[in-house]
Length: 516
Image (cartoon, rainbow, N blue to C red; front, side, top):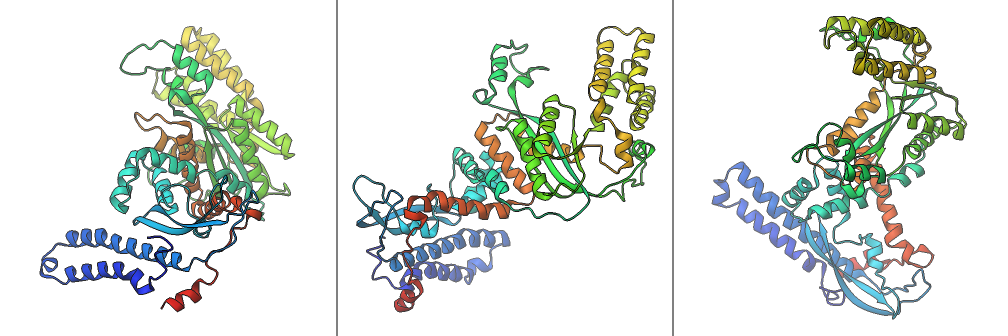
């Protein structure tokens, strides 16, 4: 039905099909077959036929819009008037099914046509409505694209292919950076710690989307087995995503013995009952941006929260050289003083590896050896720990793999000695472990993007990371409003003179009263 053919349509006529379907449902529910049906049968009937009632109601409203549409002066951003006007129709797949939107097209030879009604409705350029796009995006953040496709068909009646789900998710996430850049973060007005943390997590990628050096390694490495990847070969199939977290937490003063006690859990005893919890937490990850860019984004986020730089900024990392250089560079660029600490859990892992060079793996002796040296590290005696490792290695005359493991631990502690001031950190109540960023790596990346057999495109992986970050940070609803406004800018306002599409139904309510 076009705009011209609906001119004689009245409002009761427009909604008659929906009412007819509703009465049809009522007649069945009042019938003998319905009275003998089970709950699940009735629920299925209402879900299926109720969706059709809603679809017809939505269709009726669009028909009323077509009735109310009036001719307007249409000038494009190219300053060309579209003087030829004709009725046109476009399909739209919504959450309740397909509808047809009748509107006037304004055209002129040699330029693209414009549809003011599309701008008034903020219709998307593709077939699928923004409601379908949001549903696909929210589901894709948790489930595979194939599962989302099947779920959409089952719950909404809308058939969306797997490839279309991936594309819709990418379009849904495209305003992620602009949203956070434009969002006003109010100064938190607190003296609590402002913590930034970073890590990296590998994502299995399609070969064409690997970074050039990784792709070259994947293509030139000789595989040991034909049916599976062996140790070390999987690394050449992944692209690293940089993960960031920014949050606020109150200082929590502890002693080295307190930290050591946390590693010895006692059944029924909750040691960290009084430990302050992170607040105002934002986590995100990117597989397309460099580590340096993500780190700068995190510093910009922190600066919005503490524009006067009055708070104590703490930065926690795992010791990656790339991250350390990026953090120091960002701190200098933003002119902020930071306390940079290496995550104590990563340090302990190096100690455990060294312990197995002296004691059997999994033994009580190895555990006691680690705890003694860990306590010294917490007391700020990292130089003493390094010397002890050297002396023990010489005394045991270690060779081969055992010697390399101990040497690697000594080198790690020496290179990062400036960031191992755990004694001062504990006395100041600073966090020394990266539990927040480890949790972010697990939720943002591992739980969704490291499923068995998964191979990601660059666009699909980045979209899912962004969508999961929005959900984890509690920003999805605010983001979606921002995204729809940006969609209106891109698809409609930008195509009209002065970015002002004409309103095609200024007298809409008056016309409806006349139709009644």
